Image (cartoon, rainbow over the protein chains, first blue to last red):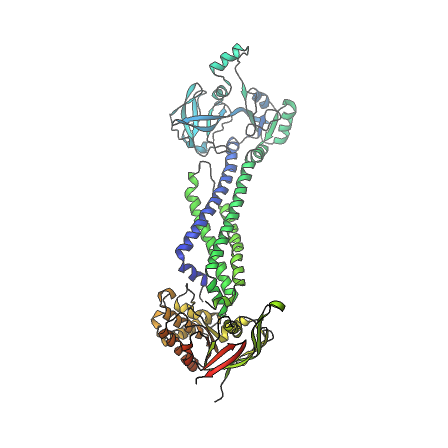
Length: 381
Length: 233
């Protein structure tokens, strides 16, 4: 049996491949968009998963440090630790910094934690060089995305910090790299004013005091205690907002990542729509180019089913090849994106299903042309 | 010897439009075409040659009348069967002004496409195709693409394609229009030979009066009537 689609494609192989590559690049961008979304969700959970604490105590009526400003006294950690059911409790700070890099700056998020405390936010599995912080001052652990190397000196505020460790895969929900400093240094960077500011404040009668504010107190529970119950107890007596790990995850995905993910989702839907229209137009053009042959085939008696099969097979093959090229393209370029792009197999399968569906829909336009083709158009030149 | 009827037409009418815009093209046509003869169909442009050809080829429906192809009545004020394409596939061969071979199929595939659709065994179809290519003196071209053949060679392949389904009727729409005098004569002589040897009725639309001498009969559309002008043989 002659496979018309195979013979037709063989006849215009170069054109067909280039067309599939073009559509493939579009599908590759769709995959990248899906990867960006996955990356955002994964990034949003990096800090939460690395800390792996049960409770987040933050300023009353705030959503916590990932969503809005939160300031609470550092010594609250002792009060929290004394609560029934609490195993460990530590103060923690989060602040955005600009690291100087080769004459420019790189935005990072600095996590300040008690170097001698019970909870360490640095996941040892992510540490690819050096060590965690050992000293309370002027040491820093950076993400490999910052390009810093061990023993590099970084000027932050008034002091120089030595890079003692390098981590991999440590980013915020926005894709900014994470760095880790001691709680003492973090408080100094966040709450100590410049000499000029202190001078001005004194002139205005404002007395500068040492700050003992942090952004959150985190805590783990003893086995057998219910996080929601302990959280309710702290809320009641301490007048603070308290979130369990699940609630904090919800805050991150709902309030921090949701808008961005909706935007990306919309872009993805639009791109899929554009790809469908492009495939449909390509098939329409390919069918138009063959109208004379289609009329002849109908005139000499070939059933519609054989001609329609040719159109559908060509469309599906175009979609499949575009999908393959799209995968290759996305894997070639995803690492060049500044933010984390997570290409997952289930997304590829989902796109494959969408591509097959959209190719089938796109083929209808060619099939309609075939059905409406007038066999007598073959006669009369 | 009694001639076998290939096409019989009774009270055939074709008009386009209705009421004030009604245009009569063929009016009360009655004729027979026999197997083994080459009939020329002539008429001025727009007189309805192609329309008549399309009705006989079961492509366009007449407005009224009856048509038989061989023993089979195919039209009696309506198509007898919905499967008009099957009738074309099994009974009729078409030849066009240009060769209109499928450009993405090689010569062999162009020839066996229709028989394969008719469920003819591939080996058998290829055997038949090779015989025809031999007959038309282009046996060595079976693997070539249409774009690699000359215009004359392609037209011969097109004629071979029309013969692949052992048709009872061949409808040729100006098959010599794109050819010079010498090649036109070759093609018409070839058609006449095929008509006789394969016992096929061939109706050939032509504008070239010089070709009429090679035809058995000349059918003419004159004032919407179908008339036979002369008999050469």
